[in-house]
Length: 265
Length: 318
Ligand SMILES: Nc1ncnc2c1ncn2[C@@H]1O[C@H](COP(=O)(O)OP(=O)(O)OP(=O)(O)O)[C@@H](O)[C@H]1O
Ligand SMILES: [Mg+2]
Image (cartoon, rainbow over all chains, first blue to last red; front, side, top):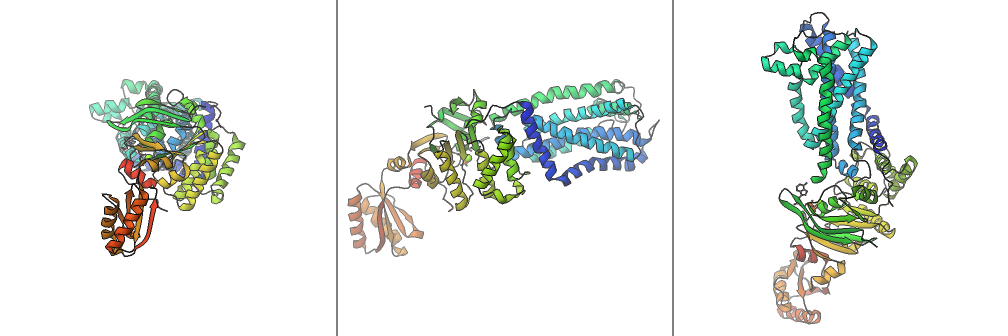
């Protein structure tokens, strides 16, 4: 019997995506943990770190929450990597790759699943933010634009995660990446002003994609930002769009290429 | 009629180590073909190339009339794969797995669900309920994996060591499934280290070693090719085993008779069956060694395998 030709990327992606929902339905506890962890981080940073911060022109909640939102989106990279390497290790990829489907649908489904969970996570964090005293001061359009920028950063990091996951192949290697993620997070304007860092580190922090998103989101929510006369800080909105687009332009082709090259090993 | 599988001078090199080194293989439609070989012979590599998972370094291969490199999509529509290691979604239950793979074969929701139920029953997995595959035993996992390979009743089915790690009942179920598929016209390529399995299931057998085919034929042809029939002598007193080996060896002029202390057995290749039998009987009597049993027989596939590859096959755990 010959299976029918694949009806296309959309159908295959939907079927694969449903697999992600089935996983959630089976493990509500894990889903809850995943949603609660960033909220915990947010609450801890606001209460423990927030008190020691003096931010001119606003409350520290208003300053910290956008940064932690950006941080959470960037850290989503780990989750994507872990999910992907688990499938690789379990040999499941071989099964999918031997099926008559559009090959990239597996990767696209991964990104759809992760984007849905990230959007849910973002929503929960915004509610948690409101509860700890954070407020937005601009209109709903600006707020939606801010959410859009955060999800755009997540999407870019997601494809970086897919590429790294395919490259690493094994879950153990993910730990290395998890360790490397932290310095990158702190070398940003999420927690401290880059102008307080030594020269070149400060420059890196100014240009960190996470800083761009954090700064742009602060702007859009009408939350206070670090005072800075760096070009990157002045053009945060532009960079918050340009950085993720650039990252996507790099990592999507890399990931697809890596996927196609799986058949060389 | 085109061959279901046609492989010419297939090679695959990992780094600078060849895993396949000029493999030739043809499998006629509707037959069960055994691929036998020791660890590292290249069985899995060959299966991965034929199922479009791996790109060969050289040579060509086609499956169900389609070139694996030029038209992998057409190949994927016609094959089923049961890999050496179970390829299942451990977070889902058995039914969800089969349903997922059925949908990915584009069966449609209703047909996929129906097929899933059918296969669960066929492989005695219908009562596993909502248990996730992560909690399945090895044998259950293997059976579900096999079911997943059968979703579409493929034209060509690849089974890479399908019964490794199964108990006799599980093995029986797999054998039964393979036979009934073959009866329906599916071509089956089956790799195995169990000679008994190849003997039972396969019409033809290719023996692989070092990435090449070192022999091919029906199991009977292969047994005949190693030439010599054998004489088996079981001695009554285990203490006389070494002496018996020397006596039998001299009588049939065999350089190295094989002994098996557990079974008190001496076995040696013979050229002239009747002459060997008389000579052995006389020599044993003269040496005062009591025999419990004497038999002439064809060589087993194990002995063929040993002869061809210089490696003992894995012992059947049953
Ligand atoms: N991905 C890989 N990278 C490097 N070497 C590999 C890879 N896959 C297989 N090999 C090597 O190629 C050779 C053939 O391996 P293969 O898995 O095809 O053997 P096999 O006959 O299936 O063995 P087994 O009975 O153990 O399953 C081995 O030497 C193996 O180490
Ligand atoms: Mg193998």
